[in-house]
Image (cartoon, rainbow, N blue to C red; front, top):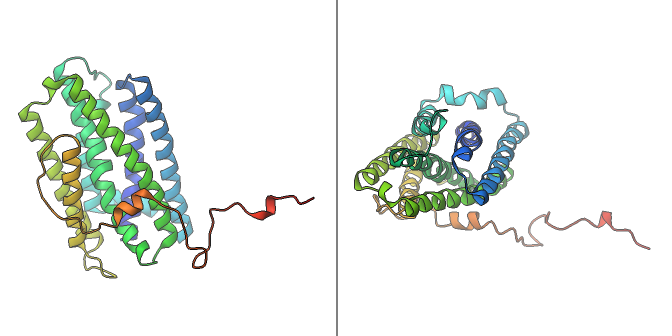
Amino acid sequence: MILWNLGFFSTAESLTANNIVLAVYSHVTNPECRQYLLRQAYEEAVHTDTFIYCCDTLGLDPDEIYTMYMKIPSIRDKDDFVVELTKSVFDPTFSTEGLENVRKFVHDLVGFYVIMEGIYFYAGFAMMLALKRMNKMVGIGEQFEYIMRDESLHLAFGCDLINTIKAESPEVWTAAFQKELIALIKKSVELEKKYAIDACPEGLLGINAQQFIDYVEYIADRRLERIGLPKQYETENPFPWMSQSVDLSKEKNFFETRVTEYQTGGSLKWE
């Protein structure tokens, strides 16, 4: 399960950075949004470096991890699906002039922010943080917590961007276009379910693939609602503790764990 997560995220973060720097940034003209996109690109670079660090710390072969998307069908299918979804903005001749092009841009933003960052990332987060809750793989679990904190902000920004474009160009948001987006999100959920079964086929430590499948359906409903689309699954959240990880409270019980948030006394100079 750990290998599958690192194998997916290592390539997914590269895809994300490419989308921001090479495609989305050039079509978003609002200066505040551009400032945030630059910040997001920086954070994605930090995430990529974090996965390299995790591989080194665990003694894994980075070449094996970074080529898993070519060897593992469930990882390759997710990556290929998102690349296909976001191909319009990579066309060098693409522009957001005209109603149909605005619709294509929103389509690609949904593929990038809602599906990739909002659905695909979160099943992987749940897997690693489920281990951390049982005091397994604590170090890598903390790294995933920090990454998830960033990705939660990225998701919120992306949904706000989509909703703002909808408000500025309401004629884009036709019933047919909404049905198309719902179908894409449902397809992405099916691919994520296959990945969950592949990554955790027999269950371990009290967690199993069905829980991750339920979680994917639950978060897909939340993403749909976030951009004004109806729920499709009505599934209960199997991991209510995930919200605590997003909040990322770093308070620790002083007597039960090694506290690292305080500055050390070694930097003080006593007269």
